[in-house]
Length: 519
Image 1: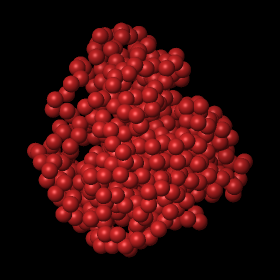
Image 2 (image 1 turned 135 degrees about the horizontal axis):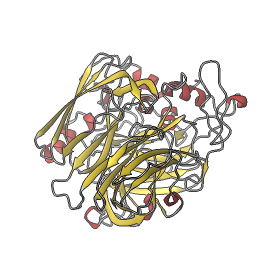
Image 3 (image 1 turned 90 degrees about the horizontal axis):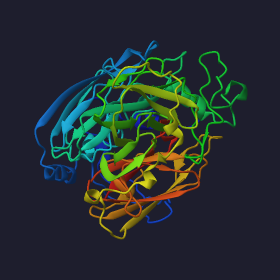
Image 4 (image 1 turned 135 degrees about the vertical axis):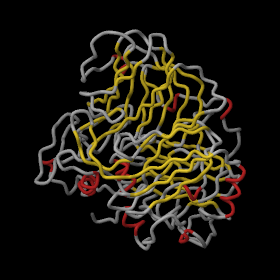
């Protein structure tokens, strides 16, 4: 690779292991103060530090409740995907990792022991929690070295469907992820059973492939790639290379995603860690009202998901309630979550997640009665009916932002090409010392301007933003190629917070930046 990866950037000068805070985050650091085009104007602004008094004061206002203690170990382990065992990294010995469930208002006290051969961390995706627990090495904490541990402890303020994963290199595209379900003590929804559904695209340990090898191949770009080794369509099998197959994909297109659907030809697509040939089966009774909590933990794949023979009533996205909307299928980008209600029919039904634009599917089964299970290749007609996207949703009145003009607008141009694989924001690759300043109590508008030919699921740490005109509250939103997406949030959680593309390979190549609260 000609460019330093995020791991090398973050690892430089951060050799101290263990549980201390990253003192290098303190003091005056370079920043950018602007309200439009994102020019990299350095300034000597003083930023709130991850362990600063402002962070402590905000946490105290949350009035942390009873502790939920959890111990977690990141390990190298074999994982059974359903008839195929691969060696990977995971939390414990299961895929996804053991679900963590907590009640809103309580305190999560989780200790991560790192038994991996390299440093790691945990990012709590979607949570508006204290900054020094956000899990970004080099920005909010020191990397947790191999053999060390870290104690995460923070109040969990909002109910909803969340998940956690590393923020080190391309580790997320291994098995290091798990659901985090925050229950509402005043839950307004009525349902009989709950089914947590984690979608993933899988490459690690298959025929010698690793996410790091995939990144190295992609980083050469199409311009310098041997085209004979490349997957030229969404259905083609990559020709073998001396070490492992090529995983670069060409020809994956989707109208829903505005063109190019993805970069990586994954050998497997999974629901709850299982291939379509050995799917998970969820048991219920006819007439049961089911709450499906859908999480896309993939690295490079959006999924279009449907339950054969059923309508979906969307109730939440990214943890926050929406005006309930009926659909046949839902499009879920990487990092996004959707909660839906269904009333179970009588029989055996396929829950199919189509890898958008890649012509492959993941599968799980809902069984409420007798009958033969559908084939692994089943494609419910609902996949081609009414497909709901986040832009069609409106926030529930209880979580809608009040009408207010933004105090600050930050334009974030999404830049780069597949040919050079030079993904960046405002033409600049990630530098942890570079921040876009905001102040507490401001209404901030982020204007994502996608000048690339790819779609990007953009994720903001530590906050939820609102899509325009009373749209859904989210922390991750799809920005289509050639389009601009404006989102607003209230600056109410001080610290240093990442903004990045949740395509793990785009992010690691440089499509990340940070917000910094001014003192």
